[in-house]
Amino acid sequence: MKILHLEDNEAVADMMKRVLESECHTVVHDPSGAVGLGILKSGSFDMVICDYDFGRMRMNGEEVVKEIRKFSNVPVIANSSNPDHCKIMVKSGATVSLSKPCPIKDIIETVNSIAGGE
Image 1 (cartoon, one colour):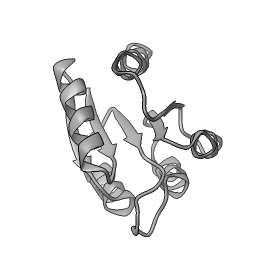
Image 2 (cartoon, one colour):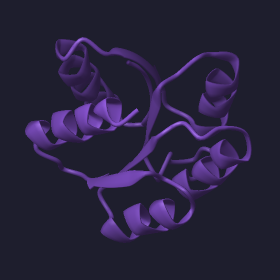
Image 3 (cartoon, helix red, strand yellow):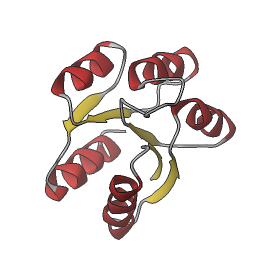
Image 4 (cartoon, one colour):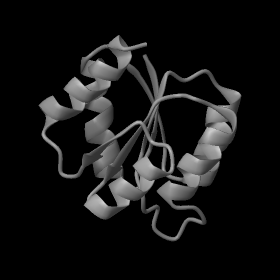
């Protein structure tokens, strides 16, 4: 699977990339929701994993998910350390949520479950 990971924390992004690539997925990372939307529109992705808070960036995860749903039905995993943010993103159209910190096995199981359901 080709996965777009939108995450402003480089340590989290690096860990997620290592974990998912170890499962034979291709991961493209961007630290911004707004730029990430452009990447999604210009590429062919099978899944998006999206943080909620992008620091000083213009868009939050809720806004990113709403924008994605205007042009794509790609599965989106909401990924935030705040469970309320995860709920907001799911209400906005995310497929499922994973709260941070998240055990690696849960990340793998969730991604593989969505991948197997397509």
